Image 1 (cartoon, helix red, strand yellow):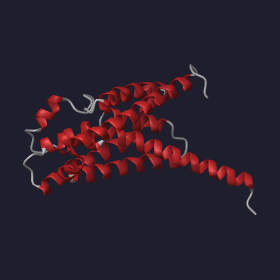
Image 2 (cartoon, rainbow, N blue to C red):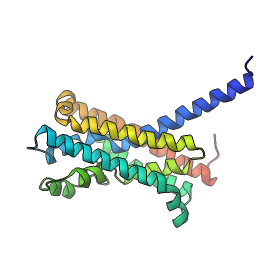
Image 3 (cartoon, rainbow, N blue to C red):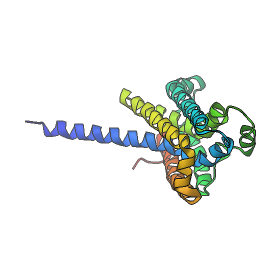
Image 4 (tube, rainbow, N blue to C red):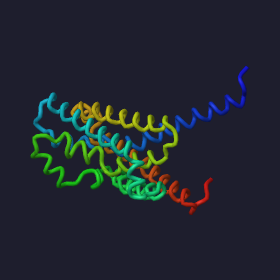
Length: 225
């Protein structure tokens, strides 16, 4: 016969796993946001055949995966090296996420992810997969900050697995979306892309506020609910 107490603990652990995994996936995916990168990707790969465009998408997705995974594993060391506390990074990350989210609510890319100068320079480059597509357009400051905040909350190995898994899923979606950029753009249309970006922006603003509140609670400024 199962112990009700054991069943309750198992259920709580499962719920915690699901909540943390969803938080990790949503915060990373909304910040990488391959749908918002579609117009720029199509512009800087204009004239390329489908095979070359797919190679560019693959290189950009792989670059984003490597950059974010690297920061996931060295995040704790950076905290210790510079003496940065998790609450401080939560507040700083919340501010960055808020600025990006507000831009996304207007259906435009944040300058922290993509500047007009970088877009112009990319249009005359032969290989744009690593820079600027991989970094900073996909793996920008906001995505890196979000990964490091998540890493700062890690207390068990499965949480790190969830973060790396979220990065992997996000990179795979980037490859699918950008690899079939022309088809996805036709299917969604300009209006559909703007709607998606605004929805992600709204969720990102809410996530940014939560990061900010978590930081204040960890500092003891706000009482935990």
